[in-house]
Image (cartoon, rainbow, N blue to C red; front, side, top):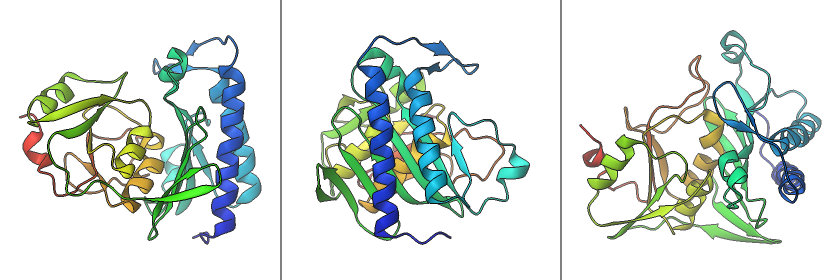
Length: 267
């Protein structure tokens, strides 16, 4: 396992900020949108951020593999032998980027033995950075100032519930209707995990497809702030690189882990 140090943290944050600058350079001008085979959008910003991050991480830790949404396919018979690797979404929330609603992020996570050991989420539009190392506190960085994050505990009604702007399934809507007194807050990308970590949101249910790079960095931040990202099927924290597929199952992200989330699941 690579040693988690202050220098590593600061270097990765700087890489995320450089990726954000590349994203914003594209955001500031007209851009084209391609559609990938999985029907998700792709822009020059996704590719530019990927290149910045891949180059920076290879210089920092040449011994570690990098798995990015924009990487070439890495077969399971290779990935299954990885003990530690970088898991990256260079531009999380490309649909929000295309809509120009500012709700997208850069996600960089270090995975060790199936769990996030370090995570950085950066919001290119505001410049805010959320970061955490396993076993330590979670932080929000504004400029040069770090503030400690804690989830809202106890979470009291009305619960502040995050819902994706672009991915709200029928099953998720049914779950929302079983939660009692709530206020639904539309929010894009992995910024939802960060709002949970800050205590401004309480629950983020996702009954629908996501990929591992969508959740790992945000999970690390949320866990360090006192919350959790739990599999709706097992109730256990999400694990990574444990199967051939890189698709996640359904999950519930909680600020207050004592909430009765199983009661909300549709039959």
